[in-house]
Length: 273
Image 1 (spheres, rainbow, N blue to C red):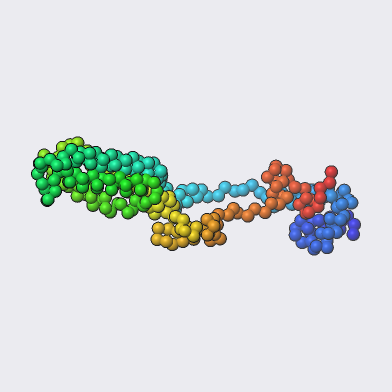
Image 2 (image 1 turned 30 degrees about the vertical axis):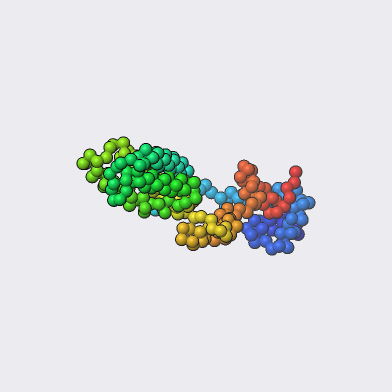
C-alpha cells in the first residue's frame, strides 16, 4: 500500500468505516511517514469542524419548570432552639412548684377553711405536685429523651380547661393578676411542644422524620424502614446517592483544556514532536 491508499484508509477510519486490520496498518504507517501523519492531523481537524456547529438557543423552560415544581417548601424550624426554650420553661415550672411547697408550709396546721375535704395547704401541695410534673415533662422532652407528642393531648386539655376557668374566676374577682401570669408558663410550654412536634415530624428529634432503630436501620415513626437507607446507615442501592458516570476521553479532556486533539491522538496514535 502506498501513501494514497493509507490516506484513504485514514479518511475511512475518521468516518468509522475502517476495519481493525486497516486501522492497525494505518497506525504502523503513521509512525514512519511524517507526511501522512500531517495529513491525518489536518483530516481530523476538518472532520471535527464539519461535525460540530454552534449550539442553537433552545426554548426557555425556566417558567415551565418552576410552574411544575410548585411553590418552594416552607423553611423548617430547627429543633435545637425550641428545646432550649422548652428547657427554660421546665425550670420555670420547677421554681413555681418549689414556691408553692414553701408557701404551703406557712399555712400548715393553721385554722383554715376546707374545700372538698382539703385545707389550703393541701390544695397548694396538689398544685405544686402538678407544676413539678409539668417541669419534669418539659425537661424530659427538652433533652431529646421524650417525644413532644406524648404531652400534647394532656396539656391541650389542661390549658383549655384552665383558660375557661381562669376567665370565669377573673370576671368575679376570685384570682389575682399575678396568679394568672404564672399560668403563662404552661401555655408557652404547650406552644413550644406543638412547634417542636412540627419541626421533628416524628417527634423524636430527627428533622427528616426518620429515626435509627436498634438494628441501625432508619425507620419512620410507624416502624417502617426507610427505603433509602442500608443497615450500615449508608445508602442502599434503591436510594443510593451516586454521581453520574463520566467517561473521560482524550477529546473531552483536550477540548476542556482549550486545545483540540490531533488526528493521531483522536485515533489512538501517540503524538509526535
